[in-house]
Amino acid sequence: MTDPAPVVPPAEDERVPEFCRSLGLPGLADVHVHFLPPRLLRRVWAYFDAAGPLVGTEWPIRYRWSDADRVAHLRRLGVRAFSALAYAHRPGMAAELNRWTLDFARDTPGCLASATFYPEPDAPGYVEAALAEGARLFKLHLQVGGFAPTDPALDPVWGMLSDAGVPVVVHAGHAPVGTAHTGPDPFAALLARHPRLTAVVAHLGAPDYRAFLDLAETYERVRLDTTMAFTPFFDQFVPFPADELPRLRELGLAGKVLLGSDFPNIPYPYAEQVTGLARLDLGDDWLRAVCWNSAATLFNLP
Image (tube, rainbow, N blue to C red; front, side, top):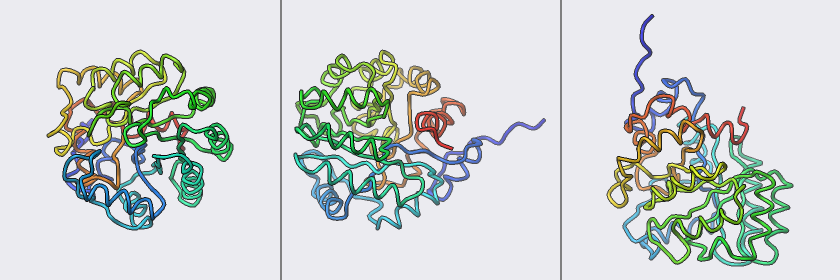
């Protein structure tokens, strides 16, 4: 019997489908993709262009395309499941964002119905409504939102999501710029209150990788996403500690590490995210788990 062909990291976007085939995967499942209402997206891109205070560095958007062109590119890459993450940064905008993202998912095959929330009195109501409409994933950005995850206004929401078992992607880490409400301590305080919460920590919790790995080990439903980690752009600021790779491998094989990219708001080709993971040399089984199998189990993908 001949040995299987080695898995070759994709040098460019066009090679990503070949990478998936070499692993025997139907494609990729990316839990950290952004689609936003056009006016809001233009404002987000303008903030990146200006290297705003919460970005802190030059950040040219690679995929500054229309929604249709970005969806088409994800399909060419072989991304079979992806999110449409939006996040509220002030009161009174989350419900409207949810209406847009849920409609977008309904009209876009492969898109996971996504929603968000903000600490405000009507949050339980619109979160309950989003769940009733089929929301499968929520997003919270503590850095941009500027609030504590333990804000009392969110307690009913966290309880509701814990009971439903619906994941929340949380930008909880300090990267790229820390604030009063980012870092492992505020997030650990949230988990102490809601230990059954299904949470996905964005960016592996950078730069506090060790502390967030600890939380993923401690709490059964806590996971991490790989967004921007192991790319040359991100490594120049907050490289992952090499001595923690064995622990990352074990968590990945346990279904606790999921592929994330931050597409389209990345300053490099999508293939660099996949290549970064492949070059860790953590094994084909780890790559299969991270790139597809763990998300397929979490979201019951066909």
